[in-house]
Amino acid sequence: MVIEQGEIYWIDLGDPTGSSPGYRHPHVVIQNNIFNQSRINTVVVCVITSNLKRAEAPGNVLLNEGEGNLPKQSVVNVSQIFTVD
Image 1: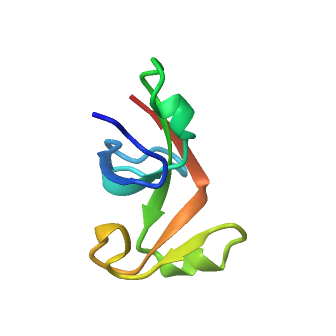
Image 2: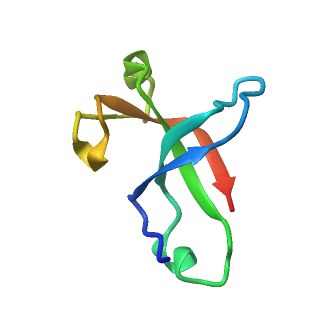
């Protein structure tokens, strides 16, 4: 499976802890394709939320319904970056 920067995947992070999101949410791949095509087995992603209030935060990106096949308007939350296997 080739993972590319900008693709959206649904990832289950389990139960939320502290300020970290949990459960199953969409995430966008932010890791560079050079690393995605290397032997590295992890991928760096940003969480996507349907909490539209997050769109006002600096750097966050508002996505319209249907973008990335998302079922509703959503926000890429750049303050929630994760490395996943």
